[in-house]
Amino acid sequence: MPYALREDEKLEEKVSLDILKRLFKYLKPFKKEVFIVLFFIFAVMVVDLLNPYFMKFAIDKFIKNKDGNGLILVGMLMVILNLISMISAKKRTQRMAKITHGILLNIRQDLYNHIQQLSFTFFDERPVGKILARIISDVNSLANLFNMSITNLVPDSITIIATLLIMFYLNAKLALYAMSTLPLLFIVLFSIQTISRKRWQIVRKKGSTLNAFTHENFSGIRVVKYFTAEKYRANIFSELAWDVRQAFVRAVRINDLFWPMVEFSWGIGTVITFYFGVKMINSGDISVGLLIAFTSYISMFWRPIMNLSNLYNNLVIGMASAERIFEIMDIKPNIKEEEDAIDMDIKGEIEFRNVSFSYDGKRKVLDKVSFKINPGEKVALVGHTGAGKSTIVNLLCRFYDPQEGEILIDGINIKKIKLESLRRQIAVMFQDTFLFSGSILENIKYGRLDATYDEVIETAKKVYAHDFISYMEKGYDTNINERGMRLSSGQRQIISLARTLIANPKIIILDEATASVDTYTERLLQMGIETLLKGRTSIIIAHRLSTVQSADRIIVIENGRILEMGNHEELMKKKGIYYHMFMSQFNYWEEKDKEIVS
Image 1 (cartoon, rainbow, N blue to C red):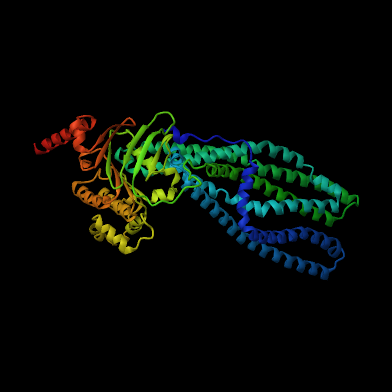
Image 2 (cartoon, rainbow, N blue to C red):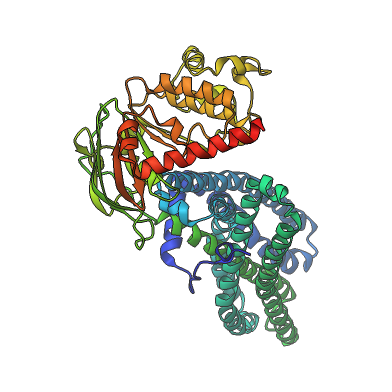
């Protein structure tokens, strides 16, 4: 199976305080709500601390002296206090859910916005499934971390300290017996925390790999079915799912040592306290009520320790996800606007000056390419696959920056133009058209979001899309599903053409825009394209040379270099590379026609 999908990122070895600080910065917008939650938490905590003392008071003062009225009074007071505690606990839960989901919403939105701004190199290096895992799974896994940090960390820490103070106040000797197992617990917890965190990192990364494979598989489900590769892909999925399962089991196995160790320490500490407590009762050093109260305080002392150990568990799990989130948020876009970048009304002159570019820093895809296109001129780029034609488009749109040379529009280096201004005025139509889930109307309006309904219809008519759209069950409101799968490839291209035209771009780039469509649809597309290109600078990339004969100029590119330039007649007269490419295609189609006739 592909190594790229299995490849996991390098694992960090220790909890980063910097990441914790960055995470808890997201609490700032919710400061007021957090204080309200803490108020409810403290109300519950105070009642919990008072309960054992009231019990001791009732046993030693009222039960011992057979004072029924006093006992009823204390009982009523405890009922009222515990009702307040119950209401406070409910309010705390409701408020905390609101805070947690608000924080996750902000983190997810920041992450999504940041990824949107990253350069193409980021997406070139990562499968889409792994990116989705960051935005969805990794962010979701932070819920318990934030929830428990607020509802457990502060109150449980205070509860432990308050309980200790009360225990030492009641009887210091008995308090020391109760805490006798703490050193053993801390040694064990410290020794397993590093292993636990590393294993949860592995779980997250294995899950991310599974997401990437699943997304890739269903995105290419047609190919899978065409080649009857279902069993092969199912075997890979099973292998990846097994990896996730094994990683999870290994993580849980070490994780599950936390609570048993706390319970073991709690149990042993309680037995020791009872053993010496009974001895102290027999010797008259303490009362029965004090020992019963002490038993409750021991429970109150160990329960928050168990909660904190669970919090640390969630911290370990959450940190694995937080690291992956901030790893992406720390990536800087390769393509940046200069501080003095300007908004610009483009006229359409394009110039490449000695431009060289490499995707991997090793093999040059373009090598000292220079050419100039005048405003309103139609220029075709031709050459074999991998010659560098599409790279020219990527550089012109500033999806990448060249390592050498410069690209100018209207005499201004495109690095001096704001990205939004540049890309708004350049439109690209690809062979593989991407349409979004939603209606036809919404997809056309992607070209200009503020376009009116009438403008959409007018544009659709210009590119000969209106007729077939009108015949659909809901017309322009017809939902076409992801990638426009309910439409034919030709219909998708025509809708893409309408989307491009409504944007009113100054520069048009057609990258094999009429390939893979039937003759009738191609004719419609060509008529629509003629409307689109009027008065605009245009670059046409095509393998079928019959579609570029009308270009004002044809640039022949091979191995990243410009070898020929001129119009169709000039290049045919030269009898160079273009001539041989054209004649080769002409002879091919002539032979095909003969085969059809025969």
